[in-house]
Length: 433
Ligand code: NAD
Image 1 (cartoon, rainbow, N blue to C red):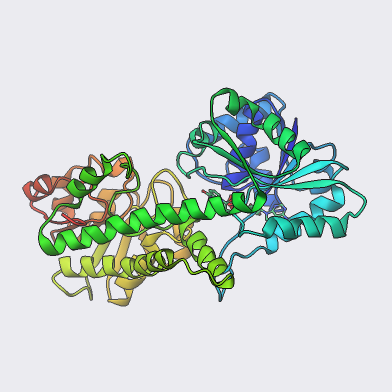
Image 2: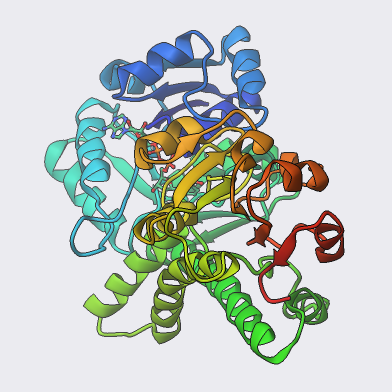
């Protein structure tokens, strides 16, 4: 099969490289020529474990190529995937669909007759209908099927997730398009990953419902953590105690600084907007969005409390900046709000992140980036464990205590053992324990 990905970011590049690895002939398109130039030199525009090797292997095998020329790329394609960004629209929080619609128009102009156009970007329910309308208007003589195929991969584990998904969701009621999708995903199907065929609208909703549900789980355990702090419980025990119940499950029950990243914040907000427009409120998701927004500044207050109630003139070191480990993605990372609140309170911030500092520096120009955790901690009154990179799990706490000017360790991911921290001469505060 010839597959084309429009948009070569986290989703387009990973999906394209994995499809090529299945044996398909894949072209990844991006309008950002810097990205494409870098990819031609096997320099990855993002950090994702294993991606460079996967890309190189498939480029060498002649199955994967990169271009900025959409028109040339889509010629002869069986399926063209739209994997462009759908960020929050400034001002109102609706999903900004301008990139999707622009791509749809370009694709419709250039695609062959009887091509499947697949929306992999996360798009609100009904977007497929609009893409279909655009295609019909732009290329009235062509038969183009518009299919929804949301992506569920997680950054940091994207290749594994793509190759071993819990399920593949395909929204289309056209049989010939379903056949093309079945063929594209056949290698996974053989691996026993279930393919769920639904209507296009259901498929679009599944993605938002999944993300909203996961965001709810995180927010739920975060509020339980707050309650634990008030009443003297340990949220890790609570999470384990409920997570062992198979109806609940153990995942997404780690209390922390609130969810962030390129998906949950914008997708929960977009779902709220869709619900409002359709006069069908999703009050639980509304509460989740509000609680999560408030939580990030609450984490900064936790740090200020650990500093003795005053941050002015104090130095705070952040371990980790990205919204989770194993990615360089800084979009909506909780660290941004925490840094802002601490800076507002008069603190000076230093930080170290194994992969995210280049991206972070663009968003947090006042943060002093350092070469390692000990350098960041040097002269700090408080150290904040922000992102649970493996590199921070086995630090020499005694050495940290020695280089610090103060003694506060604020563990927003609950990775340290409070007794070990105390033994090193530091004062510990975690989340919900
Ligand atoms: P991204 O910003 O990393 O990549 C999007 C790319 O599309 C950019 O490189 C941009 O230059 C390119 N682009 C935009 N318009 C184009 C056009 N007309 N032609 C060619 N290229 C164009 O975005 P992402 O994180 O990969 O997300 C893409 C979509 O997938 C979003 O809807 C997102 O919600 C969804 N999604 C993301 C993840 C994730 O973990 N990042 C997971 C699941 C779903």
